[in-house]
Image: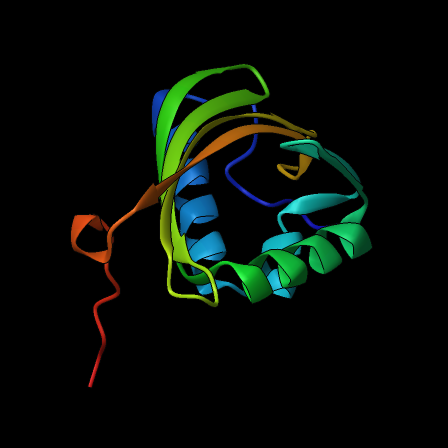
Length: 142
């Protein structure tokens, strides 16, 4: 596999670049694109679900974005050191009934020497919100 810069050990600048790249990829809602940031044998804990390997990542994200409609995410660097990064995040989505939610959480990431994420541990809580309470909106381009 080719290196996926920035590479560890991370500086504040390169950690912020990794976080922004992750935010951009997840907001694409393209499971295949997102999966390319992870090692072939990546291990995740997402809430109470365990995901192993890129194929399971793609399947997980397809299920996620089939349920979480108009998904929009913001990530923020929380801490970094060596080959690890911690982020806090918020995202909003609605279900097929039109109920909006804001999810809050934290993720701990560990990268291999080529810059691919080997481990992702996410703790997430959902809060039902009114559409009028949304923070994140897509800016539609003409």
